[in-house]
Length: 243
Image (cartoon, rainbow, N blue to C red; front, top):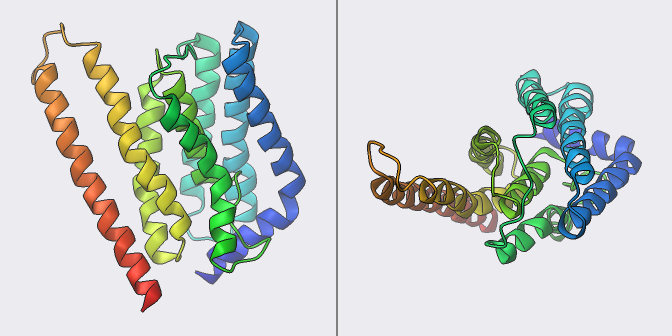
């Protein structure tokens, strides 16, 4: 656990100016996607997401988290995500077309990366040993928010990988005493439901086994089970902290 928080402190102390630039770029591109969603803006957003994921893979995991055991595994994960966005930039599959269906929920998701450092400070931690918006779980939350807001056609592979990352992130709540990651794990359950519900709804007329309505019921059951698991884990963690 000491190595985990030590690497976070090293990363923040050395890269905070770059992190400010990355956050500013994310804010600017997100505003442009909402107000002036031109083809150039969409391409720049994909390029930014590729660079952001590459930054997490190289700077965060490969350089500043090299002391951690098996750091190369998440580095490969985020490197693969960067490659997916480069592929999407070339093919144009993700259209970044706004649906207006989940604006309130996505607004909450956009705020979560900024709540991570607040959560750390409220726990008594001090900079640079705190969570910041340009860390893996915050990047995952931001990406999910962006794709949910512009979900007319998205790459489900990206969604599945990010959801998988969120579930794995729950382990950090236990092993590294990082309750901040409960923000990601709690938000990903309703996001997972909304993504796949939209996918199922658009395939109601398709012949599938099981049929679309049965898949919808199974999706609800899956999200309830995962949600209950997350809730029990988080309550247990806070109870441990109180005791």
